[in-house]
Length: 508
Ligand code: AMP
Image (cartoon, rainbow, N blue to C red; front, side):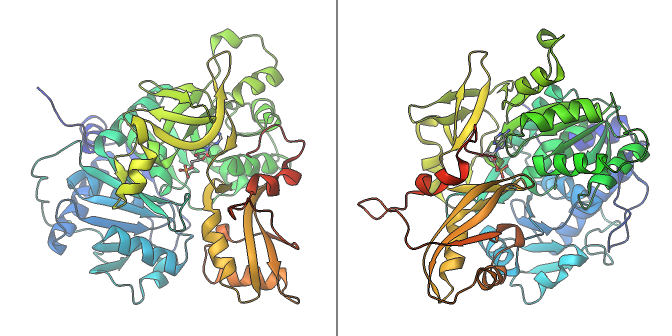
């Protein structure tokens, strides 16, 4: 017999085994009224009520439902209330501008868009069948009706489409199936030793690769979710103390924010010998890892992956063989991306690009067959990252083949920023590159050939009208000309060289 793996399994198990446990502690400080008393029984009821509401709106199985929101219990519920009944969730980055969101809504063909009250302006004039502000009366839930069952649950059905900035001017929709998400969530939970005693702090945006799958995995095992709306180092430490947090996932910029907060924190650092922090998005510096081990006393894990791989590809975690190493030596070992997760195969091709085969590789890019075929050529997913596998079998990411900048854990397409800058009438030529930065990892930097009198401030302000703040250049440098090949192609590696000289890796 073959039973489909669907993300409903995670919710159903939690409702059955842990009905009276607190499932989600919603963010207290948010514009919508927080959802109170969310036990697993209640989370199950809310998901059903959301599915019933979508029935009422006439959204069919396979229909897309977009949510633009900071982390919240309502967004968390939507992972189950939308996908659990055969519809497709499209979680959208709340930092994007109106035109960026409009593109994603149009491209995904979403029939419904929900927005957090703080993003409600994006709904004005938005061309979509149904739009609602989260937290307003009966926008999300219809508690008085039973949802229509999903007619034929199918693990190959798309569960989510996550838009990610990559090598094209427009973001691409990564189509992930129930099977992709199921296997990612279970193998990740296993490698991270998630248990029924887990208290999971959402330091990662849920929209980003579905919170790496932890909303599913932690739920299926009966752990507790602590929702965090806004990243702030001291607030993270306070919540760790208040809720007895045991686990969190974070980009290096979040880790830096916590380490900054340590310097002014009074008293003992909470969570010593209890918290595990899982980091990805960029390779964290060895010194940062050492500080986590010594100053916080937290366990440090690193994973590597992409939205396209659901995301887990590799994991790096302390192991028995390293007993007796100094924190500095352990940190050096942990600074590598890691070893393949269960069921993942990796290879590095002759050009140094990392290739991956796994059951959580994407189904495809939504309505972009050519992009899909290119990314999956030869039955390998082409990550666009450069690296090598060392003599201990660990993957080390040292370079990026694709024209993407990663700033504060979010991908920025250089081409998209170049497009925006070229839209300014005083700009003649432009190249956008990432330059190393202690706080953000990489800084979006524009090298510009411009008419006399054009200022950096005016160019940045111009970009702000078109692009989300995190994509806008933070640094503009005016140059006489840009080096090109004989065929007119920009030589970005040459442009990057002076900024990255002396750095061990060419990515941050
Ligand atoms: P995203 O799809 O937004 O999650 O971004 C995925 C990209 O983040 C990868 O292609 C890498 O360039 C980068 N990345 C993720 N994890 C790591 C890591 N542990 N070390 C280095 N780069 C990473």
